[in-house]
Structures are given as C-alpha cells and as structure tokens.
Image 1: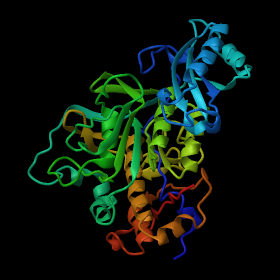
Image 2 (image 1 turned 90 degrees about the vertical axis):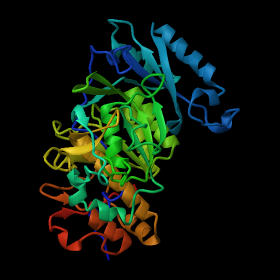
Image 3 (image 1 turned 120 degrees about the horizontal axis):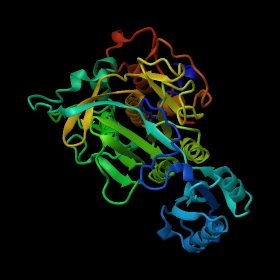
Image 4 (image 1 turned 30 degrees about the vertical axis):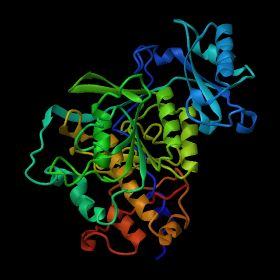
Length: 442
C-alpha cells in the first residue's frame, strides 16, 4: 500500500509542550534562585577535537576532560577583562563546545558586553540567557485518591482510552525498547505508578535530590504510568525507558504554581538526552527563539530522535521550540492556534501527581505528552519489521512543512495498522476526518 508522503512526518516524531507561553523575565530570579537571566550571558568556547585531546573522551561532565582547567582559565581571563564573573559551566559535546555562564554586574549594558565578547577570537558564540515557562491547568487540591477495587479505575476517564483505543494499541505495542526523555520540572519517581520505570532522574536546576513537582510528574504519568495495577491510570507507552531530566523549577503554592526554566538548564538536559540516546524528547514549555537550544535540537533530529513540543496557544506560530523546523508541535483539540500543530486530547486528563496522588490536567503540555507516548508506541512497531523501515523512508515531508489540520483528529489506529499491515483497532470506528500523521525519522 502506498502511503502518501504527507502522511509520513507525524508517525514517528513528537514534541512536548504545555499550554505554555514562555517569556524572558528581566527582574525575577531564575529557577535556581540566583542571578536573574537578564544579567547572564552564555559564552561558548570550542572544545578541541578528540584526536587533539590526550584523553580522547567526549564524556559528559568536566571530570572526563583533561583540558577543563585550561578552558576555565580562558573563560576567567575573558570575564576579568570585561568585569564579569564566570558561573556554572557545561560541556555541550554534541556541538563541540564548552558553555560558560557569565554574570553581569548590576546596571551593565548586556548588548554591549555581548558584542565585546563576540569580537574575541577564542569565543565561538555568545547569547543571552533566556527564560521559559509553562502555563498549565492542574487541578490538585487534595488530589484524587484512586480506589483499589479494580484495575486502573481512572482509565475510563482518559480521553485516549476511547478515542485512541489505547487498550487495543497496547495489544501490539507498549513502547518497549524506546527511550523517552521528559525535560520538565521534577518527576516523583517514587510514585506507585512510576516506581521502577524511571531509568535516569537528574536535576540540572540545583544540586541535591530531585524534588517531586506537579508538572513533570503529570507529564511522566501520561506517558509511562504502569497499567493494570488496580490504581490510577494507564500510560500511553507504559514500557518505555523514561529519562526524567529536571530543567525547570516549580514556584508558588500547590494550587497556583508556575513552572520556569532557563536556556542553560534546558541545554544541559538536551545534551544529556543526546548522551542517553533518547528516541523521543518531550518539551512541555515555550519561550523565545534560542540558538544554542536550536542547535542541540537539530543534532537530536539528525540522529533520528523525535522532538515533541507543546505549542503556545497564545502565539501565532506556537512559540519556540514548537515553531522550530523538524519539531512536532502539539496543541489541544480544543485549541485553534497554531492551526498547523497536531491536535491531541488536552482537556481534563487524569494523571499522576506527587505524593501518591492523581488529578486532572489541561493544556497543550499534556496533549504533547500523549503524542510523545504515541510516538514511542510507533517506534516499537517501526523496529518490528522491514516493512516499517520502508514506510518511514518512502518520502517524508520536509521538516517544518505546514499542513492544515483544522477539524481533524489524530488516528493512532491507522498509524499502527499501516506499520503492521493489519487492522489493530475496531476498524469500523475510524472516522473520515482522521489524521494518520507522519512521525518519520528526519
């Protein structure tokens, strides 16, 4: 069966965001509680290529790099010349760069200092620190204590249970062998629905143990909650290898939280997702265009990963990173902006919350999480046989190409059926306006 080329770029990629609108905040503290982002610059120095290095190692972290101290001295000399202070650093090995945070004194002219740094021959590039945030609707209160009388008592309330025929999809795929990176706020890896399923749990915002936060835990549960345990919900892809990469921090009271991230923490998390060979990267956040993050996303796409991002319903283009070429932008089915984003259920989704709780969430952040789980299901099927490889390579649409999706719904059953060459769900239930999207590798 010949699959149209336009059908092939949504069946294997996915990008995660919340109904989020990220903006640079000039006068507030960053998620680490320290210097405001408006007084920070990210300065990139080139790493020597492996054959010029005595250790020949591109391991993530400074301990594996014998030239660390020399590069730190270069950064400190640059900072001293311009009366800056060198803060945190991270090796962006996929780009061949060392990234240094340089803090500006109060009242400094940031654009002028950026131009001065860019003129220095030892500097590869300089960019301002950007801030992102997710605007989610999480109904928490005391939470919903799920009864234990039968399997997954909240499953029937999941929009994907009926519309996506989730149980029937799980008969052919659960995402086994697929690695999904959730770059978000902290995930409660001890939650009974996630316990033992989080392979990596790291904090790029602060030192110490990873805190359990609402947004990240809700996203992780939608993707990977354990099914058939007489509790809560069933994740869209419950057998995935989950990477919980905390790049955002939660502030405020339990019923009025704001989830904030900065570009340095996001870059560290993206580099770690690349190091861990993530197949799917979920980004439930939005904010200004950022060159460093865009370069890391391009590396992920070039390596065959699918990047799923939540589209900001208040921005015409969905905001970055949903607007970036090759990223799968996701909006809620009840949202109309941006019209080219992939629609997925985004209202009243039951999911996990910290402290052995469950609650209802709404927004494109969580619609993106559902799509990330779906991509994981399809990736498992894609690896099942040569017919899938032929499908993904049979003329994928250009990354970032516009496609009209108004009034259409995603049809996961059609996507799975195309991979296994057989009816997967109740075929008679498919609707004429369904979108069998293309998530093919780039």
